[in-house]
Amino acid sequence: MEMSAVGRLEVRITAADVGKRVSVRRLTGASVTAGKFTDTVGVLTSWDEGVLVITRRDGESVRIPESSLVAGKVVPAAPARRRGPAASYEELARVSARAWRPVESERLGDWELRAAVGEVPREARPRGAVAGRRVGFTRRANSVLPLGDPGLPLDEALTAVRRWYGARGLPAYVQTATGAEGTQEVLCGELERRGWVREVTAELWIGALAPVADLRADPCGVVLSRTADAAWLARYQRKGVSEVALRVLGGGPSVWFAAVPGAEGVPDAIGRLVVDGRWAGFAAVEVAPEQRRRGLATTVMAVLARQALDEGASAGWLQVETDNAGARELYARMGFTAHHAYHHYREPDPAPAAR
Image 1 (spheres, rainbow, N blue to C red):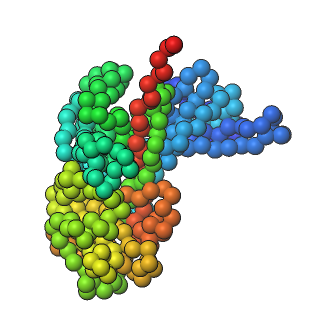
Image 2: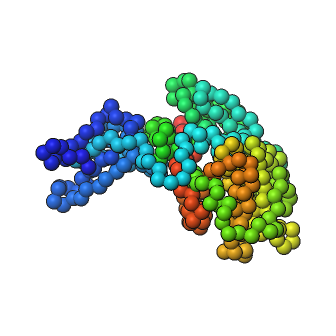
Image 3: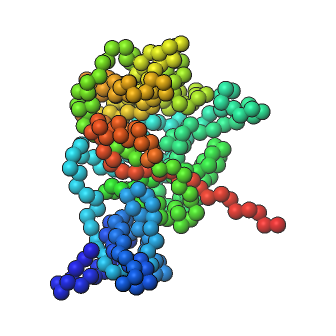
């Protein structure tokens, strides 16, 4: 809270502070005696008609009536990190994008429109589905990465985005981020006001690479390859991988696939690594359900980390779903911490035609 020289609470923010990180205290309840104080920290994304909207680190937006404010101030853009490699959001966004390359892309100012569209493989089609249905492989490869100014007013830019994806038979998605310096809380607020729907939220975690490589893990039996072979794909959670998907999986500066051989030719565990300068990106770390809690995920991570160190990397990153408690616990033990959250916003459904 903010105190004046005489000890009173003060609101020291105005509508001119939209886009800045703020801390506010508000009163919830009918009166000071019956209510309670609630604190909110995040980016002030709008202040219209007596209502503030603050976007928190996790991307959730909080609406606060101006009349309920009792204190407020602008705070530093992001808290100082106490451990792990230093990194900006933009650096990590570009590194993670290079590790999951689309098949085609186009610039819209500083925005990148990305697509990786292929025909759904026969084994992945619903029963009765006809051949020829095309689909994008993952939202990350089929979404806009908005790192800067699109060069057009926002409504015109979003119209161009919808047109571009519509021409490819895809819904339009915009990938945004929250929770670090330089992230896109204001853009999130603008999308929500226009009816775009947030469908997915995950986090990007970072950590030093050497501690992962030093984990006590037996590397024997871990096979590294430059390509995802049929055995590796048999363990990969996304079934019916198309040729387009293989291009995405194999794209990146220096890509490695790890496998722990298992019964009947299907690995007990797998992982994917992309080395890009000082960064090593880990993905697709999966273990057969019956083989879990044997340390196989740790083994795969350690072997891949050692490979990355050999190529000159020093820092690691990975993406984890917010509800994947097991993975979050594992990566926290390895020294990874959350850097920022990222989200995929889908274009609003078209309005129903008038009758």
